[in-house]
Image 1 (spheres, one colour):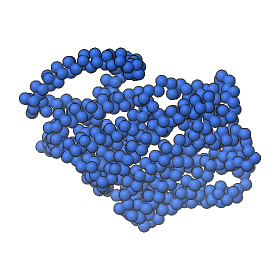
Image 2 (tube, rainbow, N blue to C red; image 1 turned 135 degrees about the horizontal axis):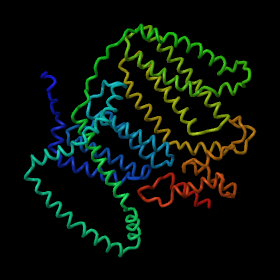
Image 3 (cartoon, helix red, strand yellow; image 1 turned 90 degrees about the vertical axis):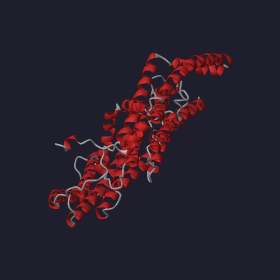
Image 4 (cartoon, rainbow, N blue to C red; image 1 turned 90 degrees about the horizontal axis):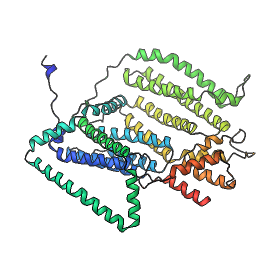
Length: 493
């Protein structure tokens, strides 16, 4: 019964956080204000990379106050986040922007876990569970700013009287700032226009939204510091009780035999073209099944990881997992080959590019898993983070919409010799929905056609959406891709 009433001892970071609330609370408030100014109703503006840099500065400052030094390996996380921030302001593709934000969130959590914990022995499972626990556990720390404030005030009661002077100073400064502001507006026309634009943005909806944004970020940022500082997550990695390898062997042998037969069919029929088909051409045969194979490749990757981690070592099991890995390589090539043939017949889309990218990533991840089967100390998680981060950063900077428009428009008038074996490209509706990233490819094509664009055509819709996306773009919302699209549009018009 005594064990049930035991209170978890306080950590050094918890004590420091309460003692230094005067600093940490103010800095967190400034950070929440900075977030609101940068990100409120602005997901892809020039302020995003500055927000990421400010976030890193904020957490590094707080960790310094909590006596946590920057560890080796943290620079990779920080560099990757900054690159994703730069990528965001260089693209107008909403899908890339969404994945960039998701990537920054995951990298930030990984960075903080690496800083607050000894994660040198953590694997995929431990890291995934810790990331989920941090996301939801931080919500439970929503009361920490208030309790830390009460603790700080009780310990620094005599100093708390300064708050009245701050309040009086704020009451005096606000009317003075307003008077000087109006005088400066009357003194300079440019400054007046800037101020009027700001006042136009100040309406009840924006005020309420900005206040909510400030409060939520303050609670979230302080909650993350509190949750990680109190060491709710165990640093130690519990030794997994490994099951008998016979179980995994029994499960995997039938699948392995099936894979061997299937891969033989792929090599003989698909890659070498030695196939006789009824009611189906070779191209139709090759173009089917790539999504199913993509799913099986992911399933095999998980299966090999489970076999490596949860079952006792066995030469037979290692051999079977190696065969499964080799078969998965063939399936990756088969799926990629099918997708390339599909593209040759139906041209490029974002999803088709994403599938090829995913297959390349799975190929590299599988290589790491295969190495880890024979080298137990191989840092598989860190290898995976580096592979996915580097590959995704390359994708985010590549502007897929530009290459889609360039490739597809280049085949509107079908040449005799072309990579594509389909008829001339005709899916103009898809082109009209591309982002401003595609403007450097679409605008020259429209100019070549003389801009004879009737209302309701795909070119008219694209130009209309392009103009609307850049209308009244404030400095805070400035985006390089949209800016270049406007410049090109003005040049051609």
